[in-house]
Image 1 (cartoon, rainbow, N blue to C red):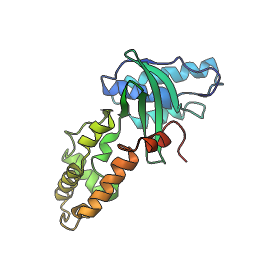
Image 2: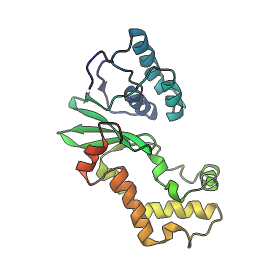
Image 3: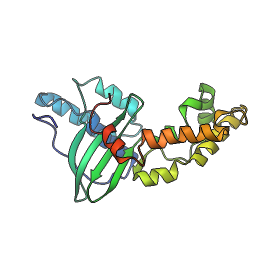
Image 4: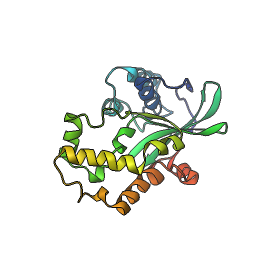
Length: 218
């Protein structure tokens, strides 16, 4: 962390609600520069507190960020979660996605992601009418919006079979050809599933995970 004044370290309990997850993300993504005035720090702290409110999302967080003097955000900070000390790090995959990782020598890395639902399907295979079908027919309504858990647990959830199933449901609901769809090809399905799990989330490669996290993406 850079030297200088910053908000107090978080003694974070395990997030229990969607609002708690967004507040945790806001604490790191809306962190003002160390040289900020007391007024600016207080303003940011107030915005972080409001991240618990109903309906708060990344659109609201971006709107709040525009009201603060940048550059914003921490990339790593020591925290204590229920008595377990560790490092909370911000992970960026280019401009595609951001999430948090809690790293401790006491147990496996814990991934915290409040927008993980978008990866139940793959944007490369989706067009606007597919998203409209998802919304109008609530095709993904039973899938969780957020994820807090280990990479092993994420791997068990985001499988190649579930990816094909969801994409098939989306294409069928949209009246599109399923047999000729890219995910119908086993090799293409496996390739895109691997990119999602092994590259974006680095579920197996811990060294890649460390390169993705704790610093701005290159």
